Image (cartoon, rainbow, N blue to C red; front, side, top):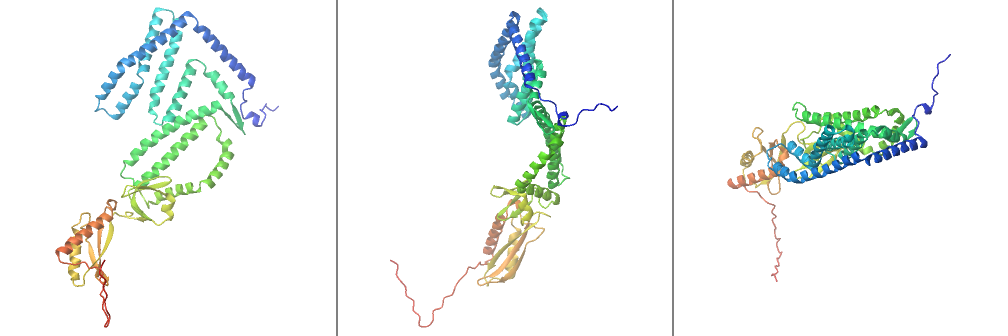
Length: 455
């Protein structure tokens, strides 16, 4: 006899959604509990406990008004303290009322337990537990820098601890689990989505902390080249965030294979719509792998001249001498002609063209030009400048002066200008003239010149 096996089909792969009658029954149960709770509040000792809790709120508010300014003045005198410690003080100062209220209400609970029956402090104990949990959540969520994420986590944690302390977590879970739908073989409910969001958020925050800490260590390692540092950091971030999302979804019981077809269709659509984005991403990886461009390199691309500030996944940040920051897509750096002034070494050769009069000795001109270039700051002395005659022009003997520098990030136009000034001063001291174009006009025999007096 064959063993009983559950029937196959989509019905066995998803949990049934709660019917309307079941949701109504849960609602009636919660309504009954709420009615009982309100009736309980009308009892004398419960009313006394509520009065004590409200009175302690007023006392905590008065203490906040009394000590708040004094604490702020004391904080102003802590100028030498580290920044992280001052931030903690600021957070505690903003929550002074809660910090005062929690010890006060627990003191009231202790006094009531010692002087009367435990049942007469039951409601006050619940209020004390709620106040303590809310204060802890408010202080701990300040560690989250994103304001939106901080608010979501804070209110979500407040709701969770409140339901847990009031013993309503099971009823709330049933209601949230009853709100959902089937997506093929996958059952998605509001409870499942909230659990997935909470777990994924925690794992992503942990991945972000690990990535940031590891990135700082990698960037401090001088044995790794800048381009490899960027590549390692990018792969590390993608791996950590991808693993956090995958593990989070699997931990909540979501079968990712059920979304394979949908994700494939979405991927194809995104592939056609985001061709340029994908191209820039791939180009960025290629740049990091072949090390053709790395942070700190001085490049020229079209009319843009500057040094690489950062290499991103989609673009490269190029800072020019005038303070402008150009965001150049990675694809342009791969397909376009890029001049990397510091690709294999830091040496950059610059050329200056000038001319002198035919009456000047060219041997002396070359010697004076080289000595003038040597005296300019930033011009290398171990790679001596050279000067050559390039031609005989209409009005001058043409020369080219070549010299080397190692700091193109300091600018090219300014160093050329300084060398020109040095040439001007040196030629003036040695009597070398810089000619300008002149034209000789000859009057043919029989020609007359007519002059007109100015008005």
